[in-house]
Length: 280
Picture 1 (cartoon, rainbow, N blue to C red):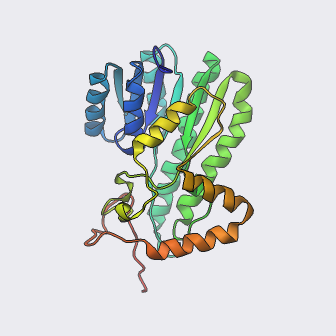
Picture 2: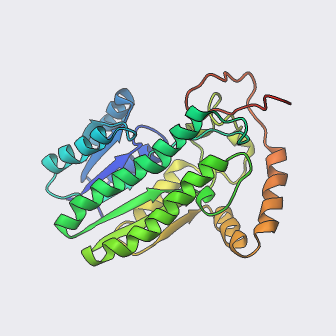
């Protein structure tokens, strides 16, 4: 019952890993602050959290807007005595060769995955330094530890989060504020749906349920664990890449050729869209 009588704030809480973490936190019957752009889905998660016996607070937030992030932490501070944990988890991406990605796609990834997450961590740290305790868990990715063809900008944002977190860990340690990065491999979420990443996740044997990721995050809360790399295959890849990057690159290139995509994809989806080669 790590979160009993405590408060956790979760961004990206309306779906996927964020939603799973909200439901895992609810089991402790503490206070769960839910943030994302989608108010309707947040309200649905709020109902599930409350059904589990926890208090739920919805604060609609777009992490690309600084005023929204400021308001998130102002409201959180008003409604909770302390902010014990923050799961900094919003993210999106576009798959395609760098020469295929548009200006807007590149900036959207940077704005959400890098700038947005950094600003959430900044305001969270202001609160936690004042109260002299706290734990920030930041969702990076296996892509924040290795490189992946056709994921170049996404990889850049996730490596950026890994480096950022490793840096502020030293700054915040004297204030009793812990920093952990989360590095999941493939996860069975809407991330891979049609009109999004467009990868048939059912054909990827190492993909795990978001509840498995949420359990790993929960286990790491209020410990000194610096990185969560999950599942085991992701951990193996990250270790091998550290010493034999060329070998991992060849394995990934081979796997990329075997990826099966959904059929009849609408390419106008504004979020995690698969960008087909324009010159093939």
